[in-house]
Image 1 (cartoon, each protein chain N blue to C red):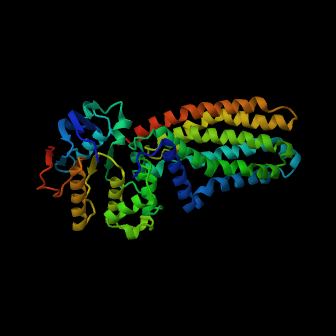
Image 2: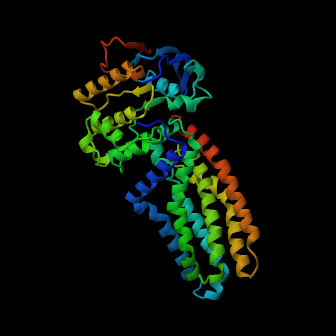
Image 3: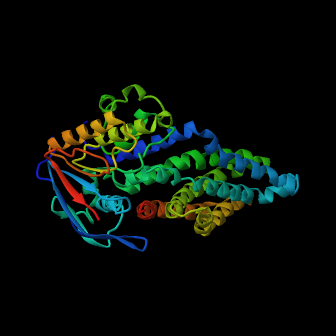
Length: 229
Length: 209
């Protein structure tokens, strides 16, 4: 043994571990993405196949679907680690817990948020979203899903010890996610009207950095409470 | 190898579980080179005491100190020097035995492949190193959890029923591991029902009632 592992190495191990685990359970990981594609495909069936009408709601539909798909993936974020005792070991590694949890949330985002962002031009185009809005849609979703992963991480950390915590988790996270939805779909709407989306995008970026800076502290405090049993 | 003079002390710990006051003014003291065995009937609070010492559960009152400094508020420094083996083995069923060690013990210590193999060999499951943890028997999982303890580099071992699911050879292994650790200057704390190092000179007892 060559001495203490650095914080960066420890966070890297957490990140790689979750990717390895996801690779072995890819069916669970793919679930939110499938949900996302299915929901956006249902809209033209339920409303109208006319692309000109669909176009007006396309940004909003993609955003709502992405939001719900992200929420769907959140509940299981910390559950298995708390149940099998891994989390109590993480609390006692002597490493800053916030960094380990942030690494876990980052891998969660790569597995569930990033695929939504990558798929968004395709599902958007199916709803008549113009090519000119692709960049804004992807950028807004990039910031939005990443923020949601951190906010959801706080919620998941708080509710992981609660039986049937998923309802509580939605109640906690959805109000916090509302600004993301509003600014995100507004940015897409602006660019489709030929205006600059920079205002709402900057607000999204501000919310992202705010949650990134406070998230690890809140998550580690919540996890410490959740392993007290 | 391990720094001398380490001391873990608990002073008048009181703890509640729900509405039951289960730990009443529990005090103990363990120094480097000692093994404290905590005994007592089921439900008397052995696990609770160990979890309070680990900082996983808050005590109602009382103080745990490590190297004569209160653990409260300096928990990262304390945790870096201790390793806890609980009722749960803290294993991921989908990861192999080797990966389990790398991804959990590796958070504390920078490990090489030979470190991991040496630990697996010491607990007698080297040949199972590349099997997913789900396919190990209950005893082999416990041995894997013990291997994590060996790789932790910790001075203080806190063990909750370490011999659960182990065969007689496994129990002897746990005794050897604790004896070696303590002889190197480490400290160990264990809650146990079974015989565990009962005749060893380093043994001290704490009976909860």
